[in-house]
Length: 100
Image 1 (cartoon, rainbow, N blue to C red):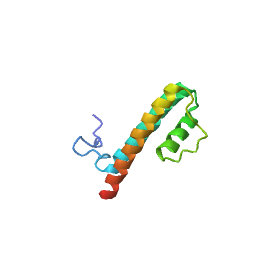
Image 2: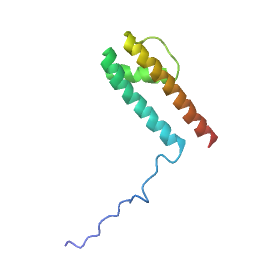
Image 3: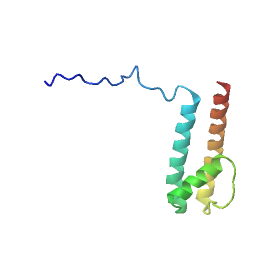
Image 4: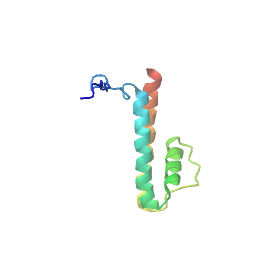
């Protein structure tokens, strides 16, 4: 009615592809890992959000400073599985990033 041309937005075919390379997957997995840490260790251990993020980054980089450790048996079990799969997946993603 007002004779103005509507701006064209991207379609499914022309949408940006964040996950074409391994770097997109690496960022996506890191975000999921930190969010899972917020929920799991925030509820299980009662840590604030910033401490959960700190714990996730320290365990993912395998620094393991020891200032935050799980105290309950359930949290220790969850943490061991969490670390095992986190380090394995990040290693695979970084390897594929370097290979490409």
